[in-house]
Image 1 (cartoon, one colour):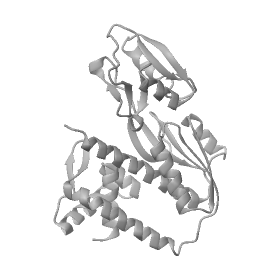
Image 2 (cartoon, rainbow, N blue to C red):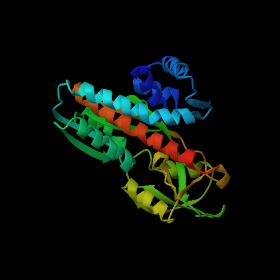
Image 3 (cartoon, one colour):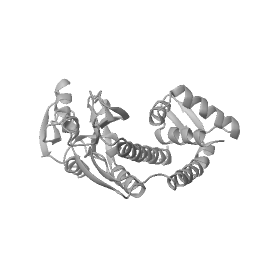
Image 4 (tube, rainbow, N blue to C red):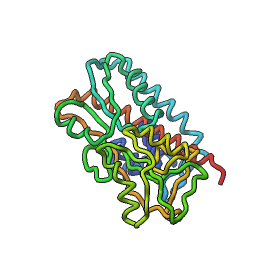
Length: 292
């Protein structure tokens, strides 16, 4: 067993997907698959159940995961003893639909690892991030969109119709919508989707704030569109069975300013990747813990 095998195992566990894990490690999918098979052969156990929906940890994999993370953390700490501390300023922007888990983990991880770096962070609609990067106003940003083809892939996620548990709308009644009132690809998504199937709607709530939109949905005041990671237990997903059309998948990517300090942007990108992977792992854990 070596650290590369453990690193591949942890990345697959956190992403639940060979392709995403390979992208996170800048390796090919076949190389990651070979490393996983070698680790399983060395240990004499199966670490994942494979299915069309992704990779799910077996009992043996669940036992290994915390130990593997601990070993890799100790190796990083040992390497840091002799690394030159980073310093300077980095300007970072993230989507405002990033929840507290990702944002908190990302900033805490970076600040702890690089206390000599001043971080200037902003959270907003990502529509303006690409131009801000190009104008030199940002060093690194997380960019999102259904038609996003920019930057390095961070991951993909579903956009979903969300309502409070028990919230009902009659099939022939207009859908009360909560809409983002700002220039963003998300703004027209609900109305365009409902119009495409000829379903009536009313605008029950408008806000510039994604958090306010989510609050209105959680309160049972309206129905709206949320990113899958911001979906919470008290909400229910509305599908075609409820008379709601399918929504596009959003691609998240990391943009870096040309000429930005490479070491700083690489360190921040690592923190972003790690925080999003930890969130996926937590969501998978919760999903697996739900009664069947």
